[in-house]
Amino acid sequence: MPSEHAHLSDTLWDVIVMGGGNAGVCAAISAAERDCNVLVVEAAPADMRGGNTRHTRNLRAMHDAPTDVLTDRYSFEEYWDDLMRVTKGVTNNDLAEVALRGSAGLTQWLGARGVRFQAALSGTLNLGRTNAFFLGGGRAMLNALCRHAESVGVKFIYEAHVDDVCITNGFCEAVTVSCQGHDLTLPCKQLVAAAGGFEANLDWLAEGWGAAAKNFLVRGTPYNKGKVLRALLDNGAMPVGALDQCHAVAIDARAPKYDGGIASRLDAVPFAVVLNKNAQRFYDEGEDFWPKRYAIWGRLVAGQPDQIAYAIIDSQGVNRFMPSVFTPIMDNTIKGLAQQLGLPPDATRSTIDAYNAACPAGEIDQSILDGQATNGLTPDKTNWATPINKPPFYGYPLRPGITFTYMGVAVNERAQVLMADGRPFANMFAAGEIMAGNILGQGYLAGIGMTIGGVFGRIAGEEAARVLNK
Ligand SMILES: Cc1cc2nc3c(=O)[nH]c(=O)nc-3n(C[C@H](O)[C@H](O)[C@H](O)COP(=O)(O)OP(=O)(O)OC[C@H]3O[C@@H](n4cnc5c(N)ncnc54)[C@H](O)[C@@H]3O)c2cc1C
Image 1 (tube, helix red, strand yellow):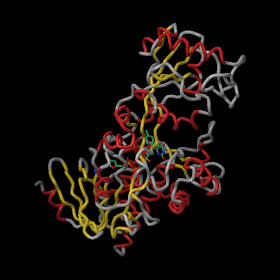
Image 2 (cartoon, rainbow, N blue to C red):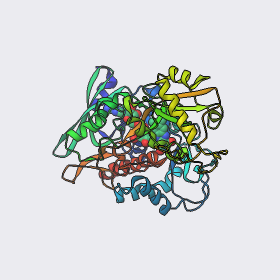
Image 3 (cartoon, rainbow, N blue to C red):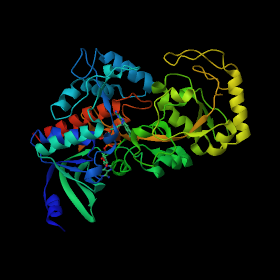
């Protein structure tokens, strides 16, 4: 065994952190700043580190007055109402309050550790008020955090997969890790689980989604396979959240199976008609502004035969949204387009004809919910309904793109992992996606993923150090 690996096994680490994304690195920094010797065990190679965090753009934070990176005011009460609306109340109120209140100091805490934010943005959704954007995106954010972590003594090992946790009487003594062909047992006093969800494990997803899961595209890292989550559950941790609850959006079906990130996003839906493989419409494409609705379309497409759908649009509609990375498929006739997409041509033609005939007269106004609705369709399109009749015609194939899963381990306000009987494990903490389901029982609020990871990562590191009297 190389001496470096022997050294890792010979050290009794104050804190081992499993997973080096936002949550894990925040935990590592918190503990190291309190004089703990900390090891981060990360499955990805160094150049692919950072998990789903690499793909992020922003975090959501409450503030009572404008800050250097957020405009206006976003009160605790407003944040709370937003969370209750999207989760429909399926949340742990105490933990939700910890996350929201903790968000108030998060941008300053990250900023003091090298993370840079963009000046506040304005736009249709006014996200500059609620969300702070990372300068250079999530990868730059994560790199800055890792640099700071190393400067306070945190040790990182890469291509190191945690296989199991060694627990006796509710106390974790070590973790077993396979690292570049070596099986290691790494002893620790405190353990932080921050290894993401199981969104990249299609077999596990199939337990909640059935065979449909094989057609999901995974928007983020291929490394979040849920191995650490499984180890905790197998060792008696209390599960939280439903197996099929997750964040999923409809993305271009030509995106790669893993790690396509935000580039595969498609904003065509409100100005298109969306057909399943039988050329039938299945949902109101114009229900609301796209940023408010795109998170339901992953689930909608997942519910269609073979988990595929097609957004069809004409030469006028195609200019109404941000151009996509993937070039649309184009044809001068609807039937020709259908053929190219693999849709039944006659059925496609009659669905589009029926839609066109149901559209009201007059121009649409995409800057508002214009109420230009079809009449007599099932389902109707309730805004921005205008005929698709100006060739050439364009089509985009759509698939469900899973962002992250919600089923995880139950924690308390100190980020301690709970056992099935509700008591906390003596020395195990969790932060980030692996426990986000405590707060996100369902639904999603843009930017809260990074907030949950940052807030509970900090708490986990602080608490781990506190137990050690550091
Ligand atoms: C395309 C995309 C865009 C997003 N945009 C945003 C956004 O703008 N704002 C927002 O708030 N949220 C966003 N999210 C969600 C956000 O990425 C997550 O909520 C957040 O990054 C989770 O942080 P984490 O540290 O828990 O997990 P991750 O960042 O995924 O880190 C988990 C780490 O654990 C490692 N790991 C997994 N298994 C093992 C193992 N067995 N052993 C060792 N290491 C392991 C992984 O390699 C990974 O590095 C986005 C997600 C995606 C996919």
